[in-house]
Image (cartoon, rainbow, N blue to C red; front, side, top):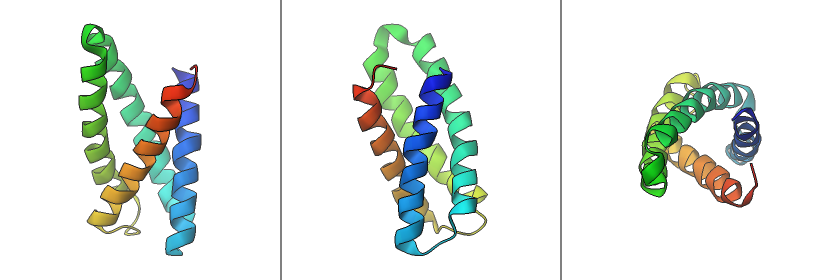
Length: 108
């Protein structure tokens, strides 16, 4: 569980750095928000997958959608006015697509 959290933080942190560079925004507040958000949502994801282990793929799909929305909200509020709501949604979607896509193929 710790390994998947670290991998997620690394992947999503890379997406945040790319976003910050492209939008010419300071990366620090966004990286901090991303870290806090991931600690919270990774724990929630693992709890959901443990509770609904018999419906793993359905639980994963539903949880990922909820995580995307929750992360968007938290990124918006924790980023110290670095993001507009629509940018928080887009950034969170990119972060989650990257970590989900890469994570699907990693043996962690």
